[in-house]
Amino acid sequence: MKKILPISLIILGTLLLSGCFFVPAFNPTISGKDVSDKVGGPASNRPLRVGTVTMDQVIALLGQPQYVSRDDRQIAYTWEVLNGEWVYPLCFTAQPQHGERALELTFDQQNVLVDYRLSKEDGSLQLFVATAQGPPVAANMVRYPPWMKFVPPATKPARPPGTEKTP
Image (tube, rainbow, N blue to C red; front, top):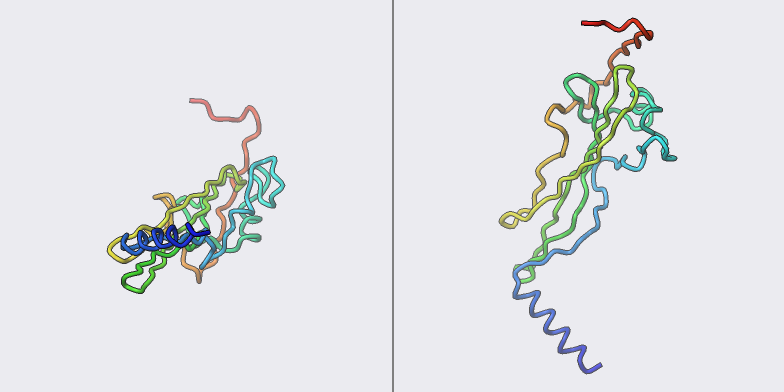
């Protein structure tokens, strides 16, 4: 019991002398909607599974996408999380650090989900300003205007066996 006070003072002194320290918040969603728990592989029990759902079904469940690829075969949903707080004890201040998350969904010519990718970009401390780099979406994705309704591309019928073009 007698060692608790000296150890506490050593820890407190070290924190004060370090200039700043990070207090994690464990990434609660602060803007947007975290949709990562809705998508899974073909054998999962999630509502959206690879190979079984169409783009129309995805949009019906998740809503309008925030990002769309130039060929309309990929869509993305993004949300912002709180990574934690940078605390500056000598300045009597704290600065939040945010991160970005993105769920990219890829569809085939029949608009069936064939792949998904969850990516993240966490902020960093830069001269008393904690910043995030923006949504971690693929380079071919463009921000889709929220006031416009996204219409999935028309499906192309599959060719019957034996009618494929030969070179």
